Every structure is written in C-alpha cells, then in structure tokens.
Length: 320
Image (tube, rainbow, N blue to C red; front, side, top):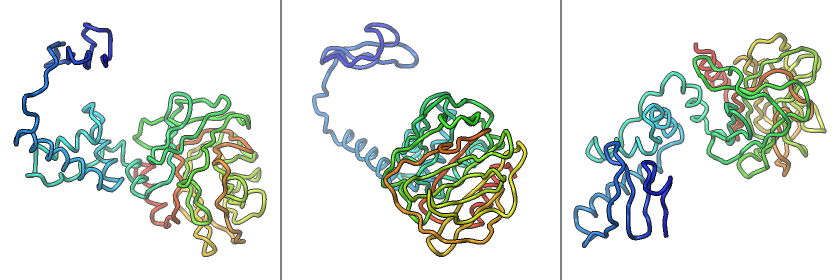
C-alpha cells in the first residue's frame, strides 16, 4: 500500500511506496531508495536506542503541564514540537537525566503562567477564523457562530497573539459543548481580558446555562456574577468604562466566598450566595447579551484562584 505524501517522484514526496521504495529528504536533497528490512532488527545497539527513546517519552509524559508549555514555547523558533525538542535534549545531554526546562520567551510568559494554574479550558482567541482552540489540552473547542471579527490586536503586552472583536450582534458568539472537565460546579474561576467599544450595554463574557454561572458587565457598567436565570451573587464596587483593556476575574469557592476582580484588585461588593450547578449546557462566550468590543485570553479553572494568583496574571499581561 502506498503511503507517500506529495506527488510521486517529486521533491515533495515523502513516505513508502508499498514495500518497494522509500522517499525521503537527506541534507535538503530528495532521495529515493529500495525498501529493505534489516537482517536483525533486534541487535543490542538497536534495542538500546529504542530503550533510550522509551525513557525520553516516559520522562516527557510525567512532566507537569507548565513545563511542557515551556518546551513548546522554546521550540517555536526551531520548527520542532515541544516533545521533539525535549527528547532531543534528553538523548543528547545529562547522561539520561531529564533536562532542565528552558526559560520561556517573553511572548510566552502569560501563556505559561495560565497553564501553570491548570485551566480546564483556555481560549487564547488568536485564530484567523473559525472555532477557538482550547489551549488547556482538554479539547473544549468553542464553536463559532455568526461573524465575529478575528485577528485584531490582543491584550497581552509583548505578545503577538491576536483577539476577537464583536459589534453587539447576539448571533456572534462561541459555544463549547459541555464536558467533564469544563463542568466545574460551585468551585471555579474565570479570567478574561475585555475591551469595550461602548458603555451602557449589557455584555456577556462567559456563561454556563441551566443554573450555572453568568459572568457579565451590566448596562450600569458594573461587573457581575449571577447564577444563570436564578440569582445575583455579587457585583463589583466600581464600574468599567471607556475603551481600554481590563483583566476581569470571577472566583467562587463554594459557599465560602465569591469575588470579582478588576485589573488584579478585589472589587467585590456584598455577596449573596447561590450554588452554581454542574449542568449539561454548553459554555457560551459573548452569548445572551452579546459583546461590544474585544475579548481575549479567556480561561476557566476548576479551582478558586487566590488574589495573589489573579494579580500575578494581571501584572504579566501588562508587562510589569
């Protein structure tokens, strides 16, 4: 069976033509040679190589997510995956000991910080079109509806990743199908960067229907967290006006506490607790009320982030 990528016998050909020919590129040259099977594929040397690769892969598999992100970020300029760069370093250095993670490039610092907090969903919103990829690795793709505008300038200082803008049409939004990871229940955190194009409108950042959370800005310009279709939980003590970027966060730790943060500062007013349910509904971005302006870097966590963690994310995002 032929498994050749690219036109056969072209410089772009790559793969096997049955058990007859092998197409490859060596030292930037296209080569083709007969398919052969080594007389003894289980020599001690070959077994040693396979064992080394198995050890490298096992070492990679137990790395914490934040370390994997560091390798991924480091590999971007080398046209390698983070896994490939890690294995390369593992095999070449330190006598089989796992190498130390590289320092992240400045552009990746916010990404690395978010990943270190183990989000259950993380939409960077840097796509050129279509659905939003979940950078958390949990597969919570946010499906696009309507005609939001992609590729606008993002919020994070020093980061070229783009954002998505909206004109207030409630048909322009994104929805992620409910999953075990995204169904947080009454303990969760939502962090997002928001930029308004107009004041005095209700605007939804993220919501989980059927008794889940509803995180939005009100027509009065206050930030609010509700239990969807049921109860108000907490409002901010200050308004968000103008067209500057702001990092907003909602944190709920069961019946213990509910907090709203604006630009890293706790701006929570009096809390009236209501239990946020684990529901079967999708998670919506810019649904219900729509959004007027730009949204970027929306992350959901199944933990209650601390004030220090929220402030650290804000400071990284601002480049301070």
